[in-house]
Amino acid sequence: MDIAERTAAAAGNEIDRPVPSAPSNRVWGSDAIAAVLRELDIPYIALNPGASYRGIHDSLVNYLGNTRPRMLLCLHEESAVALAHGYAKVTGRPMAAFVHSNVGLMHATMAIFNAWCDRAPVLVLGATGPMDSTRRRPWIEWIHTARDQGALIRNFTKWDDQPASVASAQEAILRAWMIANTEPRGPVYINFDLALQEDEITELPPMPTIAPVPANAVPLEVSLTRSASTATLPPALTVELASM
Figure (cartoon, rainbow, N blue to C red):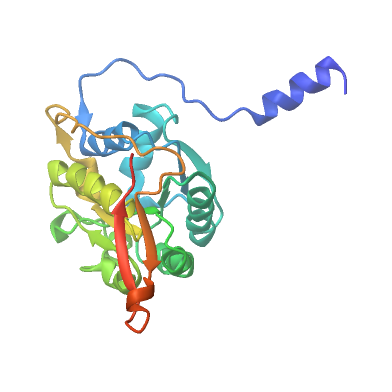
């Protein structure tokens, strides 16, 4: 392969980078949500685009410039969550996967269950149509809306939430991150109201202070011990905090 061919191949592998928009002082709820994902230093977010999270998708592209996290386009929600599962197994760190409302979450259930069985930390993000019925567009946003989407996967996730404000959405992401990384680790789910994403806010709330999770982190060491003097007794389970 000559230089021209290598240059053409490299150009074909470049990710799409948005053209910077004109400077604006306008800020949206989805911008505040996207800002927390960057603050957590999440490198990638696997997704199959869906209208229920169009606000956050817009912020990932136009507010963050498709970097940190960089979007990884998938053709199915099960593939998106499985990709995040594999990333956690290799690096010891969770990455995010975004799934569409209702049917998107249903598509992802098998992959979420696999991550649960494997104790793999995965940050699953989802969305629903406006909970305020007066703000729903005819038909499509009615079938995109569910009162308790988390019920679909509650039996095989560590925690789920549906925040009702921008500040609580930021807190929910941080809490989900902490819970996913706490042993025994596993998948978590946050469901974002579409209206919350598209509401304009006066300014970004202050970002919380976040301690980074080191690669290949093993927060807990668990061992079974049995002494000779107590050999007839059941083994004792001891849990020790590992140095971080």
